[in-house]
Image (spheres, rainbow over the protein chains, first blue to last red):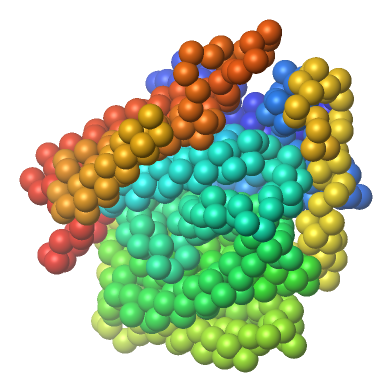
Length: 518
Length: 113
């Protein structure tokens, strides 16, 4: 058995208690262990990605119990790619949190950060729907703590809304799981994939309800309009490094949709026919549009970036909702890009806040050191809005190309292009008001109370932007990788066989009635 | 018994949703708690209702499904913890602003630092 697959969950699970027990009052030791943990995760994630890059499906049976009786972790190309993405984002976000001293403004930042990573990694790797729920809760409860890190009334209020919305989402998730278990008698994803196919045409009521409930839950996580209301205020009020880390959380929802609706409820399944094309695609286009309008309408920079996240999630979901191998490949490429761009933008928002003292989009006297921040903002804005030459443009091109010659291509092309235009106008307005017009607004003010951002903060933002540029330069190679990933998703037989036929305890047929179906 | 269980889930859910649509945090939290009770019973019923049968495979001809019971236990623990967290955060927000509405107020927001 390959034990390395569980390391992305185990490493933070060991480091977090160590920090809270042994290094409670020593921020220096906490930082060292936190960074070491994230570096170790990154190394393990890269190793897993290399191992699965040839199409191998890795399996880890917890306690050696065979699926579907035991819980399994499964690593395929998609899972390991998402874990690598998470580790890369987490590394730069952590460096920023240390450089900007955000981690000192409240207690237990590093502990919650590690638990958050544990939940996200587990959600990407698990092969069991109930286990997915548990890891969702792990990442959510850590995110509640991180969201209200450093306190403040506005943040607590936004925190209440965020927690209540997600509690509701968790309850819906449980309803969906109960319905699935009542219909299919299993919650193991590979086992479900086989059993859902066996459900007769007359008995699909329960499983249809479950499938719709499940996509609702994942849509809440992915902040798809009209279930996006939790996102703008919670991302805007959260501490900047936390908001940047949350950039990967919406992708957990997108990942779950891709996983469940390629493996368990594939497009050609009668039970869920029409769910993708009739329902998911229009709401995805709508969230693309609403996000773009929000970017244009925002009065503060942090809200603007939050709406840009909604818009880019809409973009990802448009590509996902087309549900062809090509569109999923472009969705995965765009997902990596959007995570890095959103993370960088939230960190830049914090740099702006540190130098100006507020985030309102009005002209202000120029501040020292704004040139570098303005440059960062321009690069990140170009990437986020999808202007050439950065990866946003490449990603949008891939999505448009994948949509070409499908049924709703006119809708997709029109919405994507118009929304991009509105987004460009919104970001251009914000950038010119914040950085450009400042020159005409009087002499620079030297404010001794305001501390310039630490060099490490710039390194973190620069690092994320460098990753974006690398994502653009190696776009061809990345696209080949995501194409192979999509191909693996659309041929799930290998996944199912690996999960269900690997021997373990109880796999010798001791429970006769469960073996019949296989 | 099916009728009793089904109507219990229905009444709890309806009450929970009604309370959740209120404007202040206290009824909303109560509503969410009611919903989690409803979902616990629902999960329990998802393994079919059987009376007086062992939850372990053995000589008995009928047995109850043990898995939903495990799922319910997990769900209870998680929802209990989550409710405790939301009560604490809501209390903090209420004591800080002297206002326990869950929606955004119309007043201009103060900048968080």
